[in-house]
Image 1 (cartoon, rainbow, N blue to C red):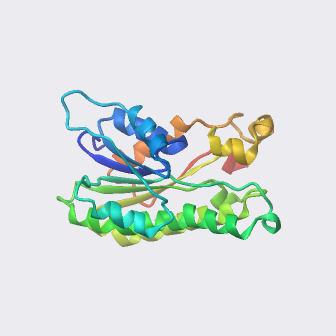
Image 2 (cartoon, rainbow, N blue to C red):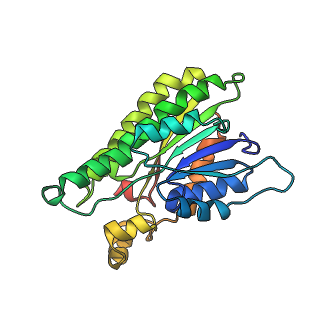
Length: 253
């Protein structure tokens, strides 16, 4: 298992929810983090909540841009202050709570652009950087994409969201084939119903008991539980092409 001490991680969607939980856990393990999101103030607040080890070179940064825009990723990569990228986590996402025939064209575009296209741009621009950093067979870089259980099981009022997350799964599997020989691992997380602001907006917490009744473990998951799964994928140097469900057993029903 690889230590995260001295490594640097870039996390899109790192200002809240699952992305922030991953950043906090990785920082506690000694990694430096660059948080990516749209709002600079929210990012700075999130970065200030991250652990900093005294006497270490660990540093945390923020960068604000819309992940669906290729220009934002290009600017980040070209930044002279860019840290070594050991881990890329694509956790940025927007939800949906409408049947397809009631979903506006703008909403369709935003969901696909943020959840799928943004993940594609992140991988596309960071992979060459990771390839150049390879330092031996046992030192691997890692991409962790955050999809959703809905990518494989669908969901009422979430057709476009499910399609975007299914695309993330397909992307990750293909990348695993493409980049493994360069010492880059690619894995994807499939969280089920997790207690986040996004879940509150899409599912409605008035449905919490209804949703919990569908889950074999009888409750929604916590962002910290998804973060520990991400930590496993980051540390295990043989974890590659993993599609890891974190759903309380919902996928078994």
